[in-house]
Image 1 (spheres, helix red, strand yellow):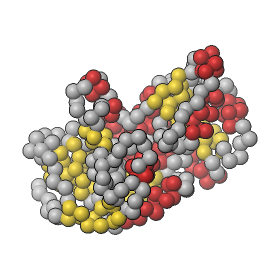
Image 2: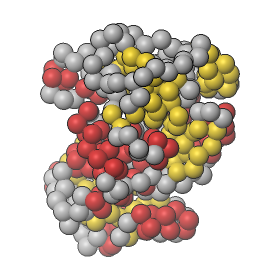
Image 3: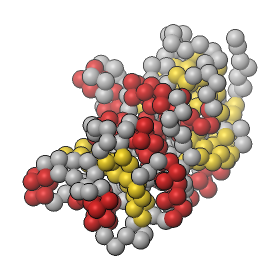
Image 4: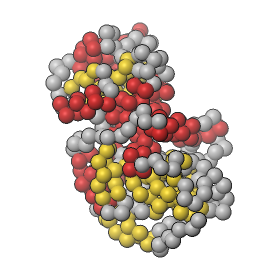
Length: 350
């Protein structure tokens, strides 16, 4: 099998943080010996992509940059050292593009925590282009026949919340609160929680978001726009507070509130990364209640395979809307305004 690969393609590029995002013709990259070249057909848009463009995290991006790290497509070329992919295979592009594989973190399966991690759409040109390279060791395999537009958001949003739920270490039948529940990560977190036998309580703002959360399996919806006391309402709805909290919102206030309403012996998992923010926990209560506050980054290769398996078995799906790649600036604007339900997925051919 062989593919005709063009010399140029279209992609979205910015030359400086917070500068113009330009949809233009750029060269098709050539894979290194350890890489595959993926014809990206669809790419989800993550809040992390917005941060990469703004440059408001304490981690510098490469510049110029092609963002994106929820890409799904077909392998059309591969380097000389690649043995785990064949041409024509379906493959994904996820946040972690590569790591050293030799440090103490990589050796225990915590490759995302590697100090030399290479990040798609941040330190490595990502999926907001028609053709992109990916490290063959980290690139996820996608089963043939899988709808690539639907699976794209699972490659970051799905894997991230699935890993967070594993980090919470909850038992079937226990309550888990999800803040920012109607967004790209939260909408999948509800479904993974349900599939894992947990009782999801969704927190977000507005009736439309509440309707979506309930449709996806949330047992309870708490609307912060209507609630006069979020902490009191969450504790009442869960008869003492949720056993775990998955914070995927980008609200510092929401994160700190979760340390108040979580149940005694509960776990607060931090996932969303609002810039320049802190998680504030009242020390006396945290000690007396023996509350654990944990950070959860993205998943490793095992987490990714497991998260994809849930999708392939039809247990989770991302509510998404497809638009053209050239519409990325508009999607970022909607995202910054908090007006997105679920996920936007970009068709790279438009």
